[in-house]
Image (cartoon, rainbow, N blue to C red; front, side, top):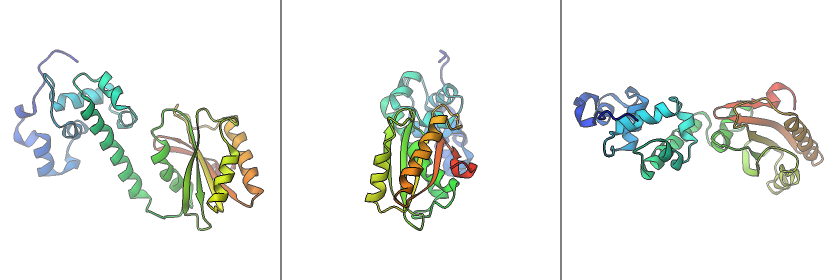
Length: 233
C-alpha cells in the first residue's frame, strides 16, 4: 500500500457511503469494493474499509473466485490492515453467495438428469479446493441423490481412488446409479490418461452389481467437463 492518507467513509457524501447507498438504491447498485467495505465493517488505523476493499480486489485481480478460495490467514498476510475477524467475514460472505447461486439453479431433491445439474450439485464440494479431491454421488432410480461421499484427496490415481470404497457405499445406499467427480485446481479441465483409466475401472466394477456409472465430472470453480456429455463414458 502507498502512504497516501486513505479516503475515509465519513469524508464521502451521504449518497456515496456504501450502507446509505444500499438502503437507497439496493445492493445491486454498489460496486464490488463498496459491498466488500460493508462486509469489512470498519477501517483500521490509516486505512478505511473502502481502501481495504480496493486493496483486496487489486491484489486478486478483481477476481472474487480467487478471493473466495483463500484461507483467512492468507488474506491477513497479503493485505495490510486486515484482521482475522474481517478476513473470516469476507470468506463467509463469499461462501454464502456461492451457496445462494447454487440453490437458485438446483432445487432440493431435484433429479440430476443432466451434466449441468450434476456440476451445480458438485460446485459446493469441489469448486474452491486447492488440491485434487475425488467424490462419488449415489442416486436412486429417479436420479435423486441419496448421499455424497468423499473418496480421496491428492492427485487422482489408482493408488488413491479406492474403487472398493465407491462400490461399498453404493451397496450401503442401495444406489442404482453413481456419478463420480474430481477437481483440477490448475484450471485445465482436459482429462488425463489416468482419469480415463480410472473411469473405466469404476464403470466395470459397478456394472458387475448392475449399478450404472452415469458420469464422471472434472470441476474447476464454476466450470466443468463431463465424460457423458463428451460421449466418452
